[in-house]
Image (cartoon, rainbow, N blue to C red; front, side):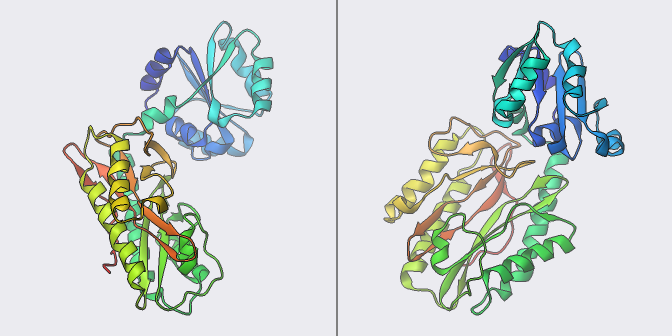
Length: 349
């Protein structure tokens, strides 16, 4: 769980006296309350309060590490007002509507409400032992589900059939799906975020499967591209190029490496194979309470890898009317290098 004292130090550096937290993952990280979408947390230099409504009275009391006030707006805002007079109050700019911002300013006329970005997220990028245990458990369940379903990915079944079996396998193991499972076969593989459809998988195609499990709020994320039958020489070439880029980027992971340099490494390798223009997204991202969180592994990122970060490495190639390949591993940055958490088998074409 994210430390309130660490957050207060970050708040002082950002020049705010208090912080109104509305991002559901940040609410959970700071309070332990698992229904973060229906909660808010106010952190001041001397205290913290979880605000939620009467549907969660028992749950909040059992889960939250900070005191609770049970009410709905505008009563929540009125309760906070006496502690905020003359204060600079940060609000999470990425997770607050304009309407609510207007309500807060009206409810706290003696406070100065200012937008901030990334204060809590910046404290979440390095995972502690409890978080790593949940991430390992989530990935182990995803690995097992993929191993179970992999033999059924064949010509004649639909993408939805595969996605359903994967979700059922993870549910039976005690986890939820971390996100909507992607199963993209044949030409659908050229859609990086194509959802599973009723398309029937054909012979001699590639099938991209992007999946993850969620355990105790923490997500795993993994992609494998599966060969059905005997794919063409061009599809095999694409696959081998992506695998080379993925393995090279993973091997370069260690503390102190610039995220942008990892993206460039993979992108340059694919460019060398004449495929760089078809790499349509960043190399990866952090994973935790959110499926996409810091650090960002894109070419413009200023993030630097640190021990304890959990990231994805996921280069891909997407050629319209031909198909696509993505290979993704979940990787822990260790003190001296890396540990690959995703163990599911990869095809070698």
